[in-house]
Image (cartoon, rainbow, N blue to C red; front, side, top):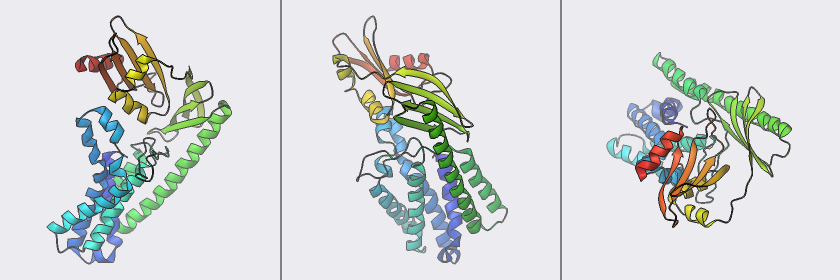
Length: 325
């Protein structure tokens, strides 16, 4: 989920914690707990600072080790320990428990995005991405904000947020049902579908779709259950090419390939250099595919420059590459 949603969830968990008798009997512990739930709901995304290095490092590592099993166990100890050092009068056990819940829920809800997390690391480095909730879901964010407003007007926060999370359980179930319906619709329209990748959008009934068949890639969109094919590409295997082999060693292209499950590629000979371009097919927007990796090589196959990331126009992409030059 996005930072804003994690933030309001952290506050909401602080409200939910008022159902804990130990917390209701100790204002000091209550203050420490709400600080713990807010910090715990943000901690796993500390890897966002990797953007300051470059996109390749960020793509390879975001929602990786900071969302792993050891991290889920370590974050609550660090946060609750720091808070207890500042507020020693707080009940440490309950401070740790609610902070742990905040960290766990952060990682848990991220699993439902199309981006996913490496939540099973180190048991498995596989990305767990259920793809039923958009990174920013207006309903999830909105119902939390509504709950916080009602709390401000004096509603008991414990039972209020308990009710809200009950509603959200039903909402998640409805999203899975919607996803299942869309997959069935895709299979009816593309009977040879071997793999269907669905990306939810901020609109409840709109999904982005990428489909892999034996010979083709299909890019489609679902609106209110109706699936419309937008683009079709031949499924061409990667050729044995010295240009491609050198390009694949580039940090930006390597990061792209570690992240993207469905893409097409282009190898083009320019006047003074070769261009290798990989295009992720999951994120079509207004007829453009914004998530790409591009590598330029000279005639001697030395890498001149490269880039990976989300770019929404060719002009901006070329500007990025020229800056790197």
